[in-house]
Length: 391
Image (cartoon, rainbow, N blue to C red; front, top):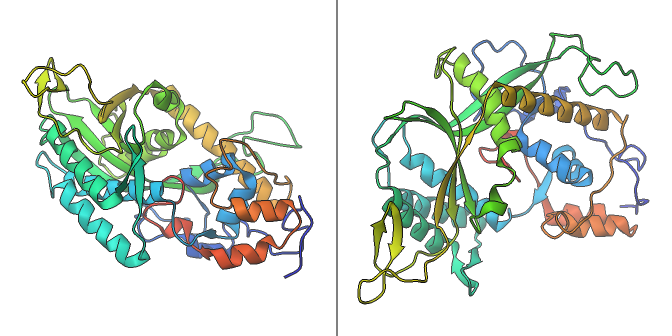
């Protein structure tokens, strides 16, 4: 395969560019995990989900490889695999109703063993202050046992839905930017015409049995819990998609009534850490670990769990929808060649990038395409229950 010039687009380098959304060859991207809409009248429209938007914002070159060339690493990064296993475990626990299902520790072990059978690769993490390496199977089991010990049967909550795939039709909005060169509001399509489907998976819908408030939980396994980890939650695109298009779908399906309001998002953080083995007791509603003599120790571990409510309203919903439309308009312009793609190198993007080695070869004019051909595999982003780099 011939070497390519640095900084060139797919069209310029003579390779096959990413096909346009909605073209016949792209229809295989539709996944069976997404349920049909109540009135499936537009089966050829393109799909969009938060993971694709997030990848585009992280780096356009990475997005081109991932969502146009349909490439991903041979094995997903450990954090993504572990997060998926945690979602599977919690989905089996929070079944609809007021009773809980299979213990999440049991489900986690079963899902992990199936993952190892598929990939034949044991993986783990460095956790704790001493960064001790823990096998992901042992870590996940311990986390789930600790989780149930912390929250018990969660009897305060009624589960309305869990791991709910959604599919919502998005229509062209009216043009408000009055620009013929670069329209971010989509006026190149006729106002009111179907544009694309927004798809995703809502972690759940929970109702507090006392207050009757309804929340959308968002389960997140994380290396640490603190203010820095929560600074973005009010404007989180992933939660915004649940809060906007996801809520529309829930109402369309009759899971929520047309006038039934939600309180907001409930972020359910689980820290990736082995539990403290010391005895404990609840003091003023908080678990405290004890010394050998039964007194409360002055040395307490960092929080293992946190449920952080973020109240949202209708204005939030409108903003989240508008931002999704702006992102999709940019995707259209990139795919049509009207905007040239670039890279977003930096200390927050490159170190964890799954395409970094190929990118460096591209940057130096070497045979990056052959390298990626040997080190990646093709995938179907819209046919996966869990999607790469987000849901």
